[in-house]
Length: 365
Image (cartoon, rainbow, N blue to C red; front, side, top):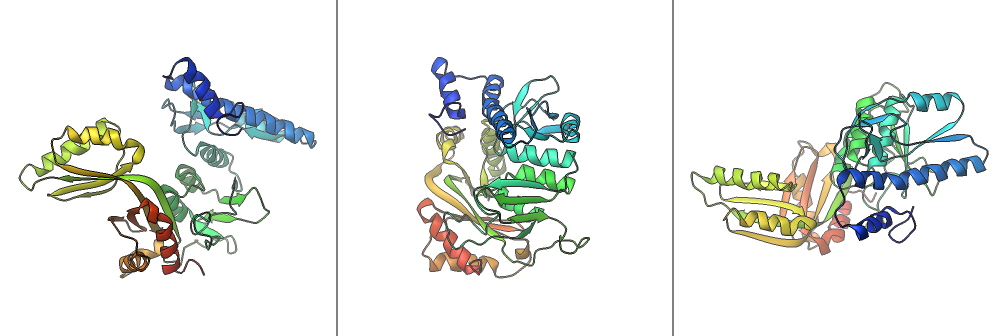
């Protein structure tokens, strides 16, 4: 429906409401945010009818998507797809508004970022679909963002776990919640482009060429992700018997302020973590209340390598450091798990870091 300024765009509707009163109740805001998808759904039905395809429009609620009452970021509790099935049985296309559902009391809710992906995956599982296809502006899942690294390659096949990890770490091609739903229901996902007829990327846990064979990655690194606009906080906790108490106080205060922290490192002497830059002032204020000395800085980005193949392999971290060193990218902090290594770099070095690691781990080939 377009961006701010375009008629009926979400940002335009929000601006109109805020002209009357800047504060919008979460319940009313969800009603407003659901409008764009409803308009798009009806327009899609009209477009199908123009091409002599019978179709029927559904809201998330009438499609049977039942959620909790966490307005703005509701979670799906269950899907009752009887009306959608009846539509399909009548040889009609069911066009369902994504990003929304309703509570058991009938209140309209929205599903938060990536909500349309979540709608698609949840309906696919409820209908026992053969597959769920997600259409985006790229040809499928790439080894990294092709807008930043032109050498990025298409990944033809991935496991649910690989894509879920990449999505959690910043890959915007699909929301991780949608991948998790599809994985639980064992419904294959296909990520395809609206601009071409390419097959895109298949996400599953079974090899389509050899049914019954479990799909496992033989790649050390599957891909790279990035999250820009981060701030780093570094607190000094003087080593003493009360350091654990101070650590508890810091994280309790952050939790009470509903501030999500990342790349957390804790020692008796120090607490280091990152937050989104949009939360910088709020975090700064919270930490001032602890009385602990701290340093804070904006202008960072997180770059991560992702791959099930790095688990237990010696020397992976050395290659990460070497790749960044050769590209003259300073490294400010790291965090890792069995399937990823994340690096904090300056925002202006983010693209250089992505390209360096893409080359270092042979993803160009």
